[in-house]
Image 1: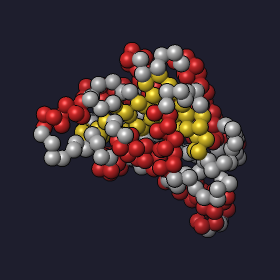
Image 2: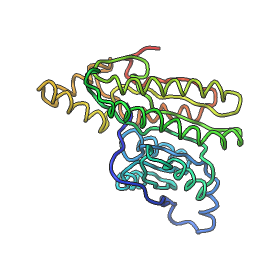
Image 3: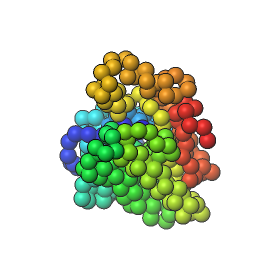
Length: 282
């Protein structure tokens, strides 16, 4: 499951992460030749791990989530150039404004990692319309709008990479997460359809489907189990660890490695790659 992004509102983007000790002119020229990546939900968890991996691989990385403080911490962890642009992807023109800011500063996005997401737990009969709509807005509609905005320039350039952070819940159903599961099944369908459509353009579209990852989102799941069952935090965490045959939670860095495989390899497209410790064999 991808990490939740939360807190503040939108402000103008800023850049950071230039290499110290180089002449300004050559530094700008060098940075200007690096490919441009956008990571949503980049403030923590999987998003932060992906942003760092992309930066280490030589990308300029635009970072977005709702929390400027978390984004600044991610930017500080990246060795290369970054752009910080806090926003709520579910609001109005936020996605168009985000892309406009990146394009004005750096040019078109060449790698999109749509990681922002959230989860909610409730019995299906008690799932409210508000909970249902929130899952669709953030987990399905926002990735769709990000992909839709990125694709034209990728097709024009003849190369692009789109990776959506889905979940093993995009392939199977579990109790008490019907809204989340529906949104993740939907986004995997989006990935497969877009990949088929774009297969001959040089643009690949994939999903990475984590199991339970050691992130703040899983911490919230643990808290929910504690509240529902009265178990201790340690017992609740052990329940989630036991769902994966390797007997532990996945690390954000392990998920980031799968994302990077999709970024590097043009022969991978239309896939939902499981990173779940062997829970769901494919």
